[in-house]
Length: 289
Image 1 (cartoon, rainbow, N blue to C red):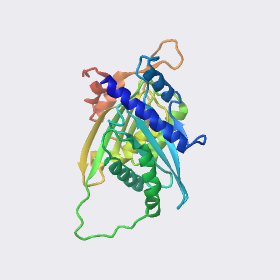
Image 2: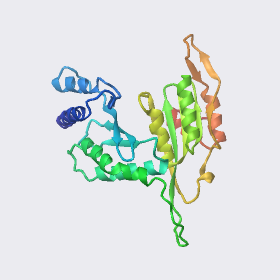
Image 3: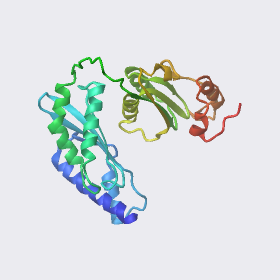
């Protein structure tokens, strides 16, 4: 397994060299960790023992007609290109539906590549060749059909855990994103920090991508619940809006901002919203009535 990981990392460095030659200007490639390629090189040379962090970056692409930009977010797992590359394209000039269609098209194209093939450069070329059509047709009118079948949507609920959520600007961003998208749920601030977001799958995934970007390290999606629906999903929601949840701090240990949230109160909150089962998933502790 070690040999295959080393081979994958060598190919990743090769592709990064190609990308930097294609996008030499400052700011065109934004590395999440600027030391990631250097640390991988040290690991391959044997001067670093621990497996380095994954390479994550954003490339800003210019589309000439219409004149818009696309940000391509890329995450290279240690197993890439033999493992699946993680890509997500976004643009402020696209509505959510067209952004979803753009990413579906990109994912389908990348899925045609064989394991071992480098495909970031190909993904960039695909966006440059095909991206314009998603902007030009972003307000397509749908003709009504008397025999149209009900469209099934995936309703998703994500339970997100963070070591802590304190900063005012981060809390403001979470609330703004939650209220901008058609999602409901809550953000519990303090230590630990818990976020629940529910709504249509594409809205929840956009929320998750947005709050993580560019560099929120200590956060993970611990649990998801998905259901198929032909309606607007209102009957599936456990929450009526997206709000900040403020509970009592369970003690101050003399350290500034060392607020451990009262998990007993949080458990009662979950019970009121029919989510008691999530307590053990989040904390590894069985709830006791």
